[in-house]
Length: 350
Ligand code: GDP
Image 1: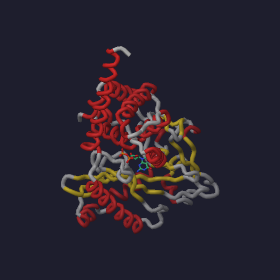
Image 2: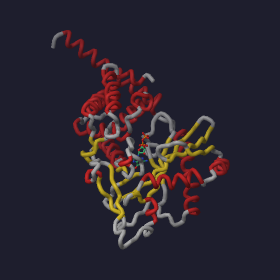
Image 3: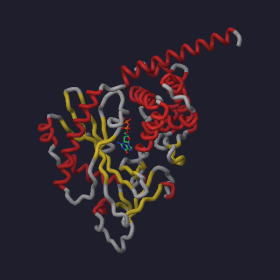
Image 4: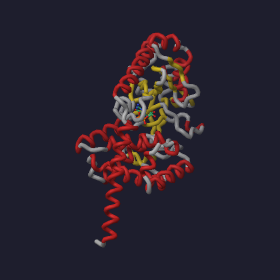
């Protein structure tokens, strides 16, 4: 090796070391949330969940629901920057013989990762045989209509100011909101957003959530979104456990980067998790010392996926996790990340 090349190597090694150090410092200072803050947020979410359970049982005893539960990164130790949101999962019970799931790729929309839920046997079991028939639109179970039912209940008929004063929180439904969201102010300067997320668990274990397609054209209105979140999170954690790896740390850092940089806000946790899982298939060294290298590789991989306009979900390669981004958004994200490749630390100066 010539002297010049040796020097360049050394400089590269120094840059890598400093990125590694910066990433860990950023993690400590900006990404990780103090455990007391997490505990307070979880407490507030739990209080709201308990109130809603009581209210729904009393008000709608025959609505076929399983017990609601809280979920999300706040519960998986994957939340970053501030403990400010959680999902309240509302599992709905469907009669197996009356409703059947149809994968999006088998519909005219040809959209893997989304599903329709079709009402069956209407001739033998007429409208009204299933509680959820009231949310049927054009022969399909409409997530939009279900959200509207809950919205009327949660935003319209619960006396949140009264409950809030008992719990010593200020609670209000967020309007307008893409999903149904409650804002809970549990300290003067602390707010928690709780998303109401109706959920169907189908016979083969497929989870469908009532979260609308982002580019909601009218023809997309009946689509249910398949959720891979449980599998994605479990896989990431299992891989880290096998080799004491830094994949979860890497995910938290890139999540924080996306949360703190408005130009990257469109990248969501599912895309980021899958990009890391795909990288894990190629790359074996996820030791804590490799965080800097893996982070750079992740940025490069994301740029590559954005250039291709395609990021497959590892649990179903037909699903394109970028399918809800417009071409312009894809270009802008790609450009921002591409620029960051030559100065990755710029992403941490927020
Ligand atoms: P974070 O919001 O980036 O911290 O990521 P989370 O891991 O908490 O994921 C929450 C996002 O995933 C929300 O936008 C949810 O709507 C969506 N999501 C999809 N499936 C699920 C699921 O099964 N459970 C939860 N909690 N959220 C889900």
